[in-house]
Image (cartoon, rainbow, N blue to C red):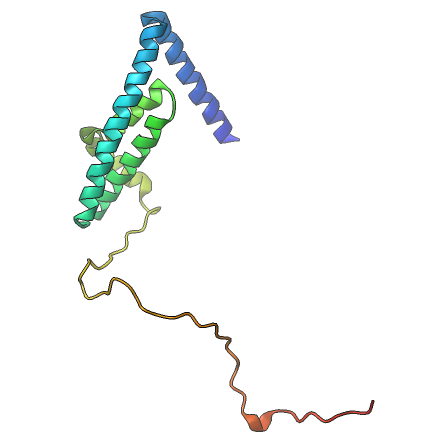
Length: 157
């Protein structure tokens, strides 16, 4: 029920902003502004995602910072895809590194206790890249000595 009201609130805010822009700068400029914000967001999202993947591929040195930045970049990228000028501006803010730096403590407090960090060994740290094995269908049967088995005798028919 709350999600429905959040969606209605989102739609009302986006429509109010678009109506105000159309009244201020005109319909054509508003459409160009929306398209430009979308394209700029896609370009920025792509570059930030590539940067985050490169940082993570070099190894996790500061798990809290790197995971929080990754989550903020992912959220910013999703907001850039959602139609609307307000969500595009919010997505752009999350994709810009200085804004992410400012929002990192708030995001860390919000996510504290919801995300678990696991220390995994690095490549080449004595752990093989794969485990060679075979799957066998096994059914565990309790060990019963043969001497304690009941003797089955044919009964009267």
